[in-house]
Image 1 (cartoon, rainbow, N blue to C red):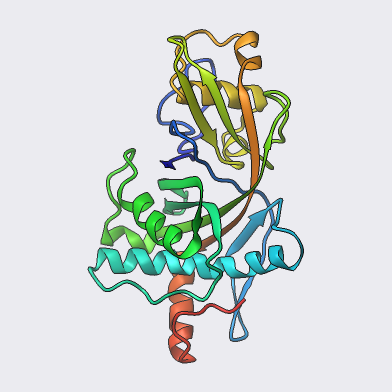
Image 2: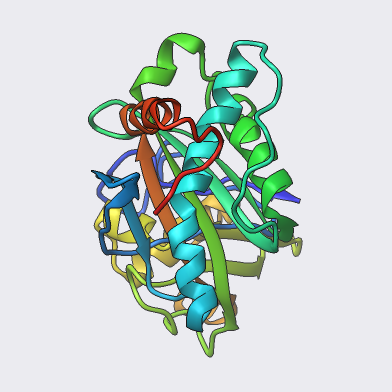
Length: 269
């Protein structure tokens, strides 16, 4: 089952939560990220993509995942480029095909406005999962019109691999900028609802924990007054992620270098 969850526009919270702000979908899915930076190396040349994440898969496996993520971003650009130009699918990538929950996010312009963000909490094989959600988030996010060929040169892609799911002890048992959160609650009609925010959403919006919870309740469709009792009734799951970003310019630079060194289909880190 798919879900969308990203912040779209910074807005001060005053008890009235606009739909354009900090968007999240109902459902059982989400994504995350945090802080840090790293350069990718392709045949001795450094590029400026950013890799984020507070939690790794552990040991050499975790480092291997981090090192592979630039190639995952590259692959998402390849998938979208070929889809928009009605070309054949890209060749099978060389990074791991293990199953993970994942999200693909597209942003546009210098101000990095959200253009699409969809993923899944269900573990998917990375090759098919990234291929599916690179297209779905770009063309089928119901909040936005489909991305066009004219826009691709202004895009930045983010790939997030979700990890470390833990049931929290309460609605404040998570850390801003570190954890993504998924909440389950019953609305005023007694229907069970779920909603999620990625780890970076709260800090991007400038929210504290309570503001984040209240916004997430509104995004999940809760319309009644939000009381302390309501917040305490929430079941909250926290998670972390590994995340990598790549601009279209970086993608084209890598593509050109691959062509120059006659190594199609692989990004070395």
